[in-house]
Amino acid sequence: MALSRARIVSSTLLRSLYRAPTHAFYSSSNGEIEAVTRKMPSRAAQSMMNEMFTLDISSQIGSCMPLAMMRIGTLIHNIELRPGQGGKLVRAAGTVAKILTEPSTQSSRFCEVKLPSGRKKSIDTRCRATIGQVSNPEHGTKKLRKAGQSRWLGRRPVVRGVAMNPVDHPHGGGEGRSKSSGSWGRGSRTPWGKPTKGGYKTGPLKKRK
Image 1: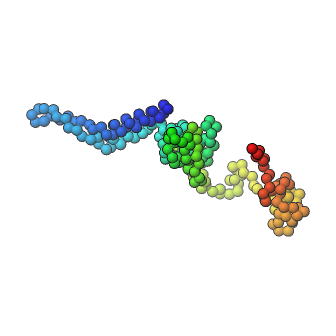
Image 2: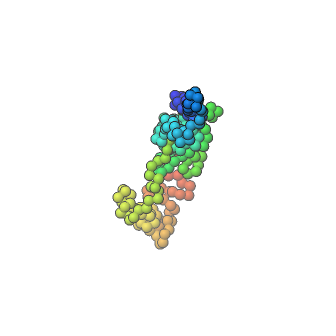
């Protein structure tokens, strides 16, 4: 509430400063002082607007606050899914999300956010996010020069199961690239021999409600 009040006060003060005329005093030929009203120069008004804009905490890059305190069209990252849970969405290098609906409306507790994938998601306005874009946007376009550079990053090579022997992987052996003819005609298996693909569930199953 305090942030919203400060934002309203700063915006109203900015409008009054931008619209308020300035008075210049001149002495006429008969010695009387006359007041002439002139509009503020555009350059001075622009500098004052920029100064007021920087005073508004909801427009500063790096500010972390609930979505309810932000404006529509704000670019954000590190978004919470539940209030107080911590940032979960839009954390990769160079990613950014955008607020599509006004978060401070009293009719709805949720606001619509456009994720980097293009998907639109409704998020609770009590969830916090950080204003701005994640740094290093060129991360996804960087190419590795040689295989050793991948090893420098701690990534080990991955060998296909069909290229192994039957003792090393359930897909190993056989003639050609066949997953079924290698190890006694069985279908697709994990490296530990459990059925996979074809609808088999290998991970922990969700509890039925």
